[in-house]
Amino acid sequence: AHFISTRHLHGLFQTQGTTVSTWIRTRRLDRCRRDLLDPALAAQPVASIATRWGFVDAAHFSRAFKAAYDLAPSEYRATH
Image 1: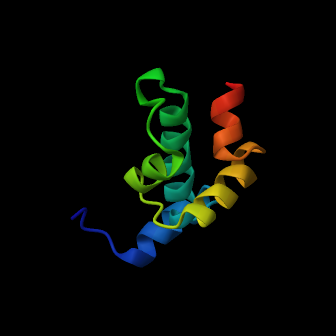
Image 2: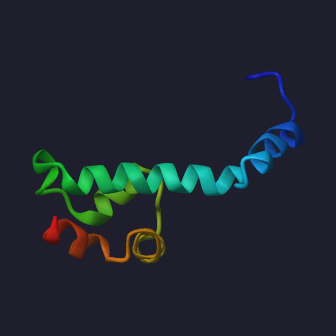
């Protein structure tokens, strides 16, 4: 769609010291974090928010979120 090769795309991210998959995961986790803090979404289960942003495995999401923010998603929601 952007007329660049996969190799070139990966090279662009490498110069920034990251990978495409890491960049995507970081953005997804940030979107989940924002949704967990949104009062309008307080009734939404954590797993539902994770699924909305592309995390199909709740356990994997929980581990990734905790690694990024030092709290489990439900703890993060409760303390913020």
